Length: 43
View (cartoon, rainbow, N blue to C red):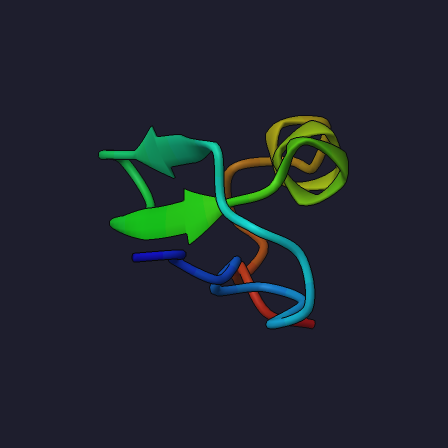
């Protein structure tokens, strides 16, 4: 079973971020973790 990235919904998720409660692909994880913590996950 393939889990899609919660952010882009295109790539396979490889990371689950407990803080954001989101499954993310590597590119989206890098984008989300580089944002200030007060911004929402989905812009």
